[in-house]
Length: 458
Image (cartoon, rainbow, N blue to C red; front, side, top):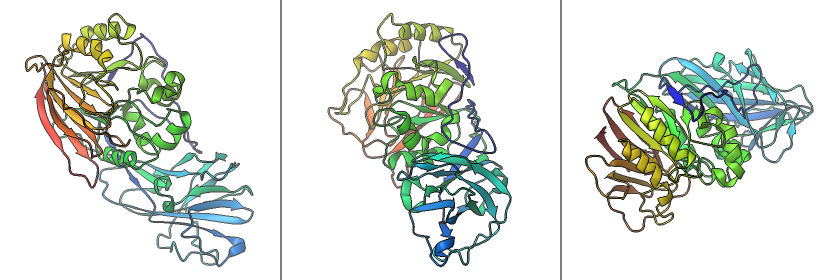
């Protein structure tokens, strides 16, 4: 994938929010559609304590590793439904919010016993932690996710047990499966087969991560969809802080960060300069503080723009866009940003200040534009910058704001609005062919709304 930034050179950097021992986590910028990740939560977790030797803690909302008193943690996962070669397996745990942390997060080993009882295990009958050491977590803070590479222990479908101990008298406390969204995770990544056509897949949505469950459900959809991931802004709520990225985005969509090409929203800019947004995504978000950049996928030129800064005719962004489009040799073009020029939602009116960007795209025969901001799904037919139907040169546009934030409602339906939904969470998936594209709204589990179709490039 060829990535183009508004300046000729850029030092690639990586922001790591997870603390890992035994190896450094490297988050690559590859967008190749070659892998898929599936996240599993424990089927059992508990801990035991030497001074309460007959007590079972299987229903506790925390597991603990400690050496005074001695406390050991056990976790069991059942991996099913994965295919292909396992290329990565990560055990992820979140420290509880009601503890200040510890100088030692524990040493984790695989266990041969996979039949121990969550509600029956005590110090007196605990299984042996007998496998090879997989990793050690160093000092931990409260309310933070940590990660261990357990690839050596996970070969594919099957049941896996992990045990953890600590030599420190300062205990480390982690959330359990009883904690809901903060439950431990086993993230298994496998090599996958590209779509039958071999054409790039481009999938994403906006208005994503908060304290609810919608973002977890849409992240699970991505686990089974290979390709490049895009976001149409408002990546995290409410204020785009570093803590919100760590607490809300990282445990859900964060596992797809290495293949994500984001755009910023107004909530990301609620923190001055959207500094945490640029720090979290690094070079994948374009030059820090600018937020507009482009890259190529197959026969397509892709442009990510920033609707939170000046977009007026003659602005730096508008001039860059025209230059960038003029330099592209690709026959098809797709652009995305946060604020929609066209929308029927009653919550946020059309953002007319974005029209110069749309005009530049129209002048250069662009094909598709995707927005967020309104927490709905809406598809518009090919439209010119003035809002009129234009079958020959018009751009097909989508409002894709159903990533996890609470849904909005529709008001007056605007001209050329062809499909709408305000109740389903989901992602918008494109398959980018050489001279055409397929689109599909993919709903989360338990919801049935769908919208799909095909368009040709100008």
